[in-house]
Image (tube, each protein chain N blue to C red):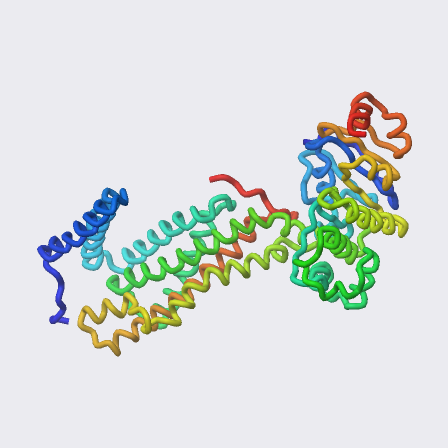
Length: 258
Length: 216
């Protein structure tokens, strides 16, 4: 680990030249994006410096409780962001937060209990971040698809309800389609891992000097954990959304406005 | 939308609801199988408040066919099986015969059906549940004259078998052809209701008279 090469702050400053190059291209091509590129680059820098400082403090002082608090905060933020994708679904924020929270608790909890990952903040926080991010994407894709189905396929759903199907039965084809849609990206990326992409955890470990064959062990665990998190998040989001969309008399509720 | 509506729908009869657009005709129909819930008042079915029935059982006993045909599966047989999953091909053929379609339609892809054929499959699907009441929400408004006539034949045949039918119609001539009783709904209120000959010959009030004269 002592041989890890990390760029100096001067090196980081020098990399700004690449941003300047990007801005120059954008100006030259009159894309009208120069301001946006500059702001994005500045934001990324400031955000990462702030997170780096915070994590430095967290790893040194916060312990297990602080790490769990950090993961919980990430779940809440992810729930809020994902709820926006399901705008109009009754109690979308609750649905998305519970979906992300359940996925994180089950997958991360299982790995911690099985001692596959440690409870050290240095492990829990970044791994938690990865799993929250995966669960967020799965939840967003599911909510988006189900919201559109409830809006665009109301006549089809009501035709099924009129045949005496329960809300759950009437919505089942749309839930299946939404789950398939939500799981496809992670299945595809799992298939090609190592072939057309070197995933983040493995790359990070290799950069940190870990032997590639050891680094992939971590990556395999992360990948399987992400697969599980996507599946749990999508399933919980779909089931809860189905429940929120129908009332006790198995009527499809009108979609609200956010 | 509906206000002060008091109606008796006779068993084994065809009651046709007419009225201008936005009068609440479809809402009234959807109240009858609880796809809508009244904010006040009560509906009764077979001597008991409909809120007392299991809603899924109620909807199987009170079938609904929507305005434009809504097909739900790839093939006609699969579509009928959405109503009755264990439906045999023989029973499905009988249902198709009731709506005037040949048995070889069972294997037809639903995407290849004409509007009239699709609506008749929807009728067959509703009839598959052997309902006591059939609700029809302007079932011919999206169809051409020939297709509309074929759907009317199905409705008349069902009536002949004693099926209680409540139909929302935009065409007063169709109402005259099919109805035993007519309900004239104007701005959410019942302007007139009664046997079709009486309502068309002697509307009970000026509102019903204006509507029936204006459209015919």
